Structures are given as structure tokens and as C-alpha cells.
Amino acid sequence: MMEVLTDHINEQNAAEAFTGQSVIFDDLYGANTIINYKRERVRDHVLKYLKPGSSILELNSGTGEDAIFFAGKGHKVHATDISPGMQQQLMLKVQKRQLGTTVSNELCSYTDLNHLKNKGPYDLVFSNFAGLNCTGELDKVLASLSPLLNPGGLVTLVVLPKFCLWETLLLFKGKFKTAFRRFFSSNGRTAHIDGNYFKCWYYNPSYITKRLKGQFDVLSIEGLCTIVPPSYLEGFAEKHPSAYTKLKKWEGKLKTRWPWRVMGDYYIISLRKK
Image (tube, rainbow, N blue to C red; front, top):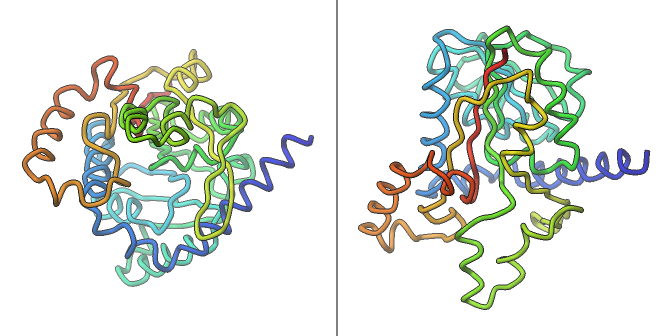
């Protein structure tokens, strides 16, 4: 009971943090070249598997950038988030683009999907950019996915693993805390946004595949920002355009190969329901 309560408090802290940043979130990150590269990679990955006119349940949808994108591709999206501020920004975009018939929303935690009002079923459950790393109950989230999906439905998750090559290299700059923060994170690591503190956990692909084994088949695992540097190295693409282009090319070649697929800042994993 204490662990459940603690995780609930952590979710509320995360919701407050992202609500506080919601109004300026797109301005802060929308122009970041590497963030845009990551979005393009994730979207291309999803579109490889998604059939035309699919229904999507998006978890931790944020300000709705991905929901708007997939709606523009002819899909229907039910966008969920625990942050009221993020949901408000999403709906402002939906209203502005007149997408009310293709994008719906619901304030709901991904650890509470059994209480989701719109249970689908869906063709895809999608979570981008490490939203699922904000819970120590990822097993609970994974267990709730199958009933929400049609037969043959997809799950695509973008998650922070326990090892990141670029972060480990920061050891040589004397940044020991950052270099090893993922290794010793079984009880969560503290993160903060504008003075709001919450915990993050790191999960390797094997954590997900073991818990969905028997219900889902793995389609693909891709490393994201394995060779391309993480987006928090601000200005890298602009300062080193030639190197950035070469790194993107190499990441494109190696993204699905071991060990590169499991040592990026993130990985993208897609599974199909049996």
C-alpha cells in the first residue's frame, strides 16, 4: 500500500511539473534540431506498422504534437495525460485545427487505465519520449494494454534504458553523477522541472518483452540517439553540421543492431498482440 501511495504522489508531482511548463513547452523544445530528429524517427517507425485509418490510444500525450500529426495522417487519436496543463494545450491545438472529430482527450494516468472512459478497443497504444519512465509501476501499465487492443493491435513505446553510451562518456568530463545515474536507479532517480521534483526509473527492453511474452510478438527494437547525441547537448547539430549528418547516417544503419539498439538515450520498441 505504501508503494502505491508513493507512486501516486510521484505521478502528481510529475503532473504539477509538466503543467507548470505546459504553456512554454513547445517554445522551449520545438526548435531543437535533435528533438525534431527524434520525433521524425519515432513517427517513421510507427507508420511502418500502422494501417490506414487506425485508432490510437496515446499515453502521456503532452501538448499533442504527435496526436495532431497522426490525425493529419488520417488516424483517430484518443490522447491521454495526467497533466491538466498539457491537456489544455492539446485541446487548444485541436480547436485551432478543427480536429475535434479525429482527436479526443481524457485526463487519465497510464497506471489507471482500467478506469479509462474510452476503452476502445484500439489499433495502437503509443507512448513517446519516456513518459513511462515517470512510474515505478511499469509492470502495471503493461498488464493493462492487451484488453485495450484489437486482435493484432500494436504497442509502440519510447523508453529510457538503463545504459546510455553518450551519458557514460560524460565520465571523461568529470560528470560522474550524470554518467552513472541510470546504473543505480532501482529505487528511482530524482528529476526536476522548474523546482518541481519527481522520480524517474529506467527500463531495458527485456523488462518489457518479458512481461508481455505470450501475449505479444516483438516487431522491432531501435536505438534512438545512440550515435546521434542526446538533445540536451544543445546546439550540437548547428555547431557541427557535417558531423551531425554523418552521425545520423550511421545511426540509421545501426539502429536495429545489437548493441546499438539498447544503448541509446532512448529505444523504440514495437510489439503486436497475438
